[in-house]
Image (cartoon, rainbow, N blue to C red; front, side, top):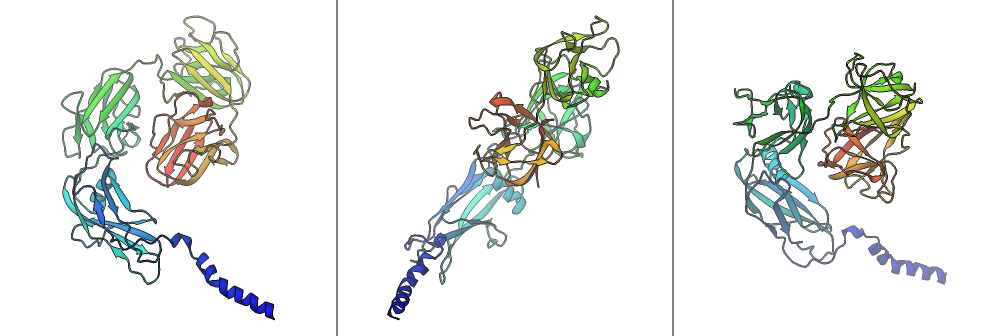
Length: 487
């Protein structure tokens, strides 16, 4: 009995210590003293700069405030609203413990002014900001800072998308199928496109399916004109004098444009034809980074002879690209020669065993790679936009599509940042990758061509995720395409 009493006394003695040790440690902090909650801002009068959308426009800082001797954690709520609205429809941000600052980037703040607060573009508005501190302890009052007032001048936002349209462009005047340009990293309002244009006219639109707003030819071939609605009768277009490969660089902020003719390949189109296709012509695809290179990736399980046509026609004057030696089999860096029936009778062809192949022909070097394709069993997401960041050992796997070893899917949360696809998770980073066809490619929810980078060779372009959220990814490693779509 005496032993039982001793045990009970020991439990009663230890109980208060157990209660203290079981308190939520996340809500414990050091004593903050009696300092007031004070909010400051780096600028009181700001003109937002359209040319610098990623710069910090406003930076708010505040003191921690007092936790009133409780040692409890403090979390903060930051609010921004038009002056005189008593924060009725404020932009509110709930912040984690220990956060005592808040930053608005130029582009984000401008969007809030126009879309949330209804401020007219290019107008000046007075804003009010305050921060509220919540002390995570019973019987304590929240703290509210004094209100800080700021004047901010907005700007009229520009389009983040731009498309080529016109009879000179690849897809003609079809506004719902216009040719997308690529945005230029680090150059607000900058776009670039390179490819084949026909003799004819072109201009630029901002929205698929809509002919306005558009950017037309300005006072000369170096200037753009912004046509906001169809009520504007000015609709001048740029004239492309002859078919060829061109590079277009422009900026819709300063309305400058440069159209330059580039070294052009002899052939703008090629066709695969032979026994594997039943001697029907199948178009080859132009390489995303080099118009002299063409690809044909597919199931050629029938096998047999093939050659490459410069026109989808067997007429005697049509030039075919063929091997230097008849019945040359699969391989890499194989010689290519031109042939037409009018020139000679040596109708040589390549001859392959049945299978799946990736075929690449370089019309600049006149070389061809005919490579049997073995699909990678797994594909992985890598990058700071992905769930596991740049950890190659812990890269995020995509899910194989049942019944198709070439296709993979994935759905999940992507952060703001970069990503690319690893085929083999090599620790030295010199493995095989699927990368974007331009630096910081912006996913737009449609199918995009990828570049296969074997064993770490070549460029290292990545996709740039600019908005965090849930995304669906569909990847085809045989045809080297990917769709990255925000849900």
